[in-house]
Image (cartoon, rainbow, N blue to C red; front, side):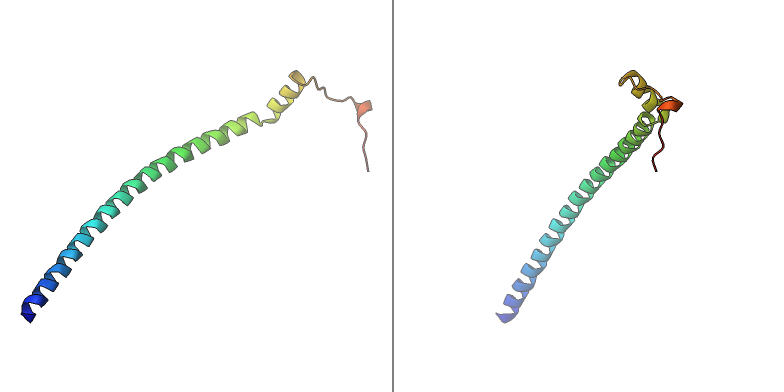
Length: 87
């Protein structure tokens, strides 16, 4: 009787261990799929970031800023008599 009980208990522990293994592998695969999706998102965001940096560099050029100041704001370069040096 005692040997049967030990054998049944060993079988249950083995079965529980196998079920746990299957559940862990399934969770691992789900996490791997999520990781791959996040890597793709990161790649897309890195590309977008690079494009935004390029666009920012284009918009912030000295020539463009001066052009916008002249056209939109009506600013002009001061003449020599209009410039004062402060110390």
